[in-house]
Length: 121
Image (cartoon, rainbow, N blue to C red; front, side):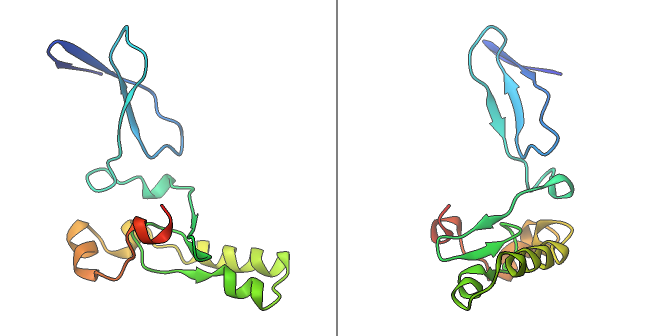
C-alpha cells in the first residue's frame, strides 16, 4: 500500500502482532512515520499493555478509569502470588474496547479518567 504526498511517497510497513502504531516509511529514507489510530481503528482486541502509574495504580486500559492499587496491596504485605492474583483479576475485568466507553464521545462524557500527565506517562 502506497500513499503519494508529493514530493514523497509513503509505503505501508508491516506492523507487529500487538503493535499500537500503523507504520509508514518514505522509500529511500531512514526512519518511519507512525499513526496511533486508537479512535478510528482501535487495536483493543490485540492490546497486551498495562501501565503502573507513578502512584502505584495498575491500569489495564488508558481509556478506562479503573485502577487497582498495587502500592496499597504491597504496603499491606501482599506476597508475589497475591500480586499475581490481583493483576490477573484486573486483566480478566478489562473491557472489550476503549475502556468500556464505546467511542470517543463516550470517553469524553465519562470525564472520570486521569490524563497521562497525571499518571506518569
